[in-house]
Image (cartoon, rainbow, N blue to C red; front, side):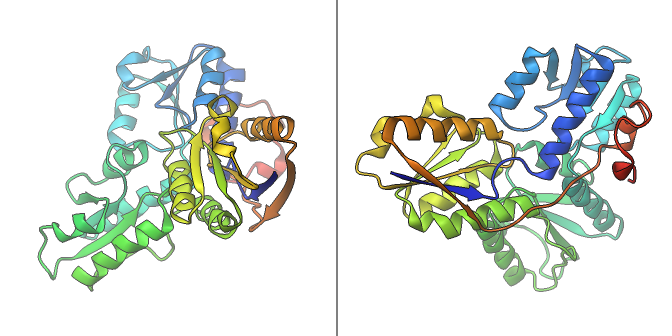
Length: 321
């Protein structure tokens, strides 16, 4: 058996930044430390921080007044920020800058009088936060069929934004339907779907055709991980979205010559390596890495956290906003 290890895979710059925020905040404040929603959508990452005394909350009423609080990588609405101020919480914003970009676009379009169509998955933390920026001017669609049922004037002043972790292909289908129904629709100058999401999808598209089975490391509530498994499955190989090696089933590998392994943007590398070791030990698999894109993106820690660090603790090269 041969293993093809996809590159890029795993943690993106936004996830790295959010996790480092939580690590540094634990150093500063100790436990318990509160986080609004999961810091990233990954079972292993969340469980690791739970063991260290992090408390993940769904409402700010669960956070004692004046306590430190991190916002997750998925972003929060202005209403949540206001609640945090009213409760005098020491808020540290670990929102991915690419999500913040979408929030700012929503604010801009709303101020300019646009109706904003957000393409995304209902109930996802990122979508909830984005829609909170302009709830009276924003509608959510998930599919091209949803576009057919949009009850807006044909000449409406309208713009679209997208959730950052969508499948590029799926988003383009919805965008095409929007453009057909509303030729005047406006859009931001740069695509909202994040670089890491696109790169991981591109790697799967290019490499899955060489494989009989695809293992995608990531949690079921991770939007970008689910999209990777869907893309791989649509290309022909049997694709499985798993949190880790414990979920692997031996019957998946009957008469299998090649396995592609990749990981969603919130999946840690150690779970990838455990799967590789399992296949090497059980099947004598050999492994080769394939690079489709190089990634060299880094996001600095938020200023509110850097100001709490000892002088020189974060390095001069990362001092700029």
